[in-house]
Length: 290
Length: 278
Image (tube, rainbow over all chains, first blue to last red; front, side, top):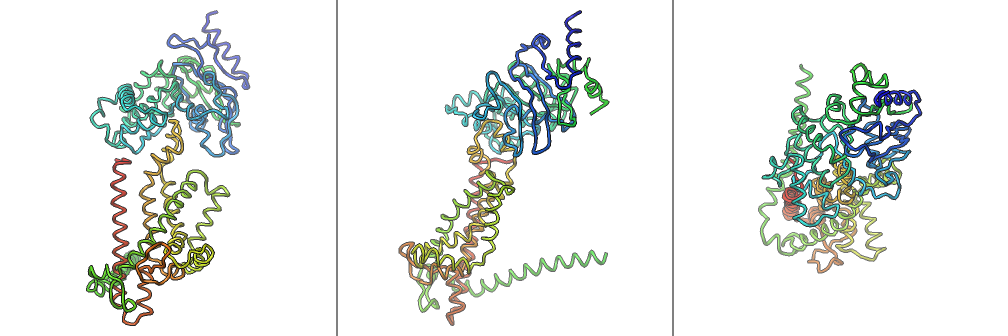
């Protein structure tokens, strides 16, 4: 029996047991393109808003340097999952989280954890680009200064570097003092990505970063995400299955069930799309459900 | 069709009516006030119970009273507005308590504030009939309106800023200072202006607290007569004081108008450097 077929069998076994935490072992994960070492390990994560369950018992590894796409119909808890990784759920009144999230050696859910420090390491990009109502320069400068960077030369270097990284430098280098909100939607989103990159995070969480953009801007941002692969660990929520297929190394399908959003299937992107183990995945990726 | 026309006519009629009332008021004040207006009127002290002379000391007293009110109510109002909008919500008991108190405070008639000010500031705190007592009483009156406007402005600042700032590891204080307060600045200034207007136009509360004395005040502990009190006195108690009452009213209007425009200009200028929208 080849490795591949054995993988599929194991996967099918695990899926027959709905309570089983579904996590790929490094061997199974072992992709040719990136190091299959988990950077974020989520175990038995459940999340409730007041008395409504949003996530139920999610276990999932996010691999270092890879792009993991979270797919599934609206309202199945993908965004909630994403925001629990950088503790942004703290800001939602009535939101309760249980389970464990480990980031490197760090317990993300520890009550005494410095969330400002955590969020510096785990950046987040939102669906709607949110440039602050400041100049382009100040948009990037503000978080840097907040995190203790003082030297203007150092700040300028970082500014130029991240704007180059997102391909915005040539477009804005002559108008760094112009209001960021005057940029086009796609440029705004790239600025937001640059702003997050300026803090040199290890992980980037992206919540449908392209869905508010026109197709051309969306393609530019998608290329950018592709280029960031390897340097950053990326978790991206997307409703665009073709996009997930193009850019992701791993895909995870979430689905709303009676007791909240569940992780239905997790695996190498190609496998999830071409040989889904679960009937819901098969139905979703082929467009029959969702 | 007829119904539509009738409705249109009614709407126009009410608009014209409002403008007419304002025009009548303004015309009255301009016609009777402008001939009296001069530098001497603005700078000299009143004589013959206000029938003759100017309103110099009264302008100074008014300015001081309003200044005291703004200095006392401004920071307190802003701080409470921040507390209300950022650190508690109307759904919580504490937030609800503050909001209810404000509603009650905003609805209290000014004469009651006057009595309270007299009992508390003048007598209990032994400040006597003074500019300080008057200013502090006005601060209590202006507080709800300043606070509500500022809190509304802060709440109107997009939640995205808060979320995004948090996601970048920016502290709440820094987000407040660099993003939310600048975004809410126009509303905060508007609240301040409304508060000043309310303070500047107040008569009843001041009669009991800052008093009637129309001399030039030396310190904040001196009694001082505000413009509105002066107008009231001239119009109601002094036979033959009408002309100076009109002129004083005109000065009061111009003063409030100037403060308002100045503040609007300054905010705009400050915001241009501070915050940028497309």
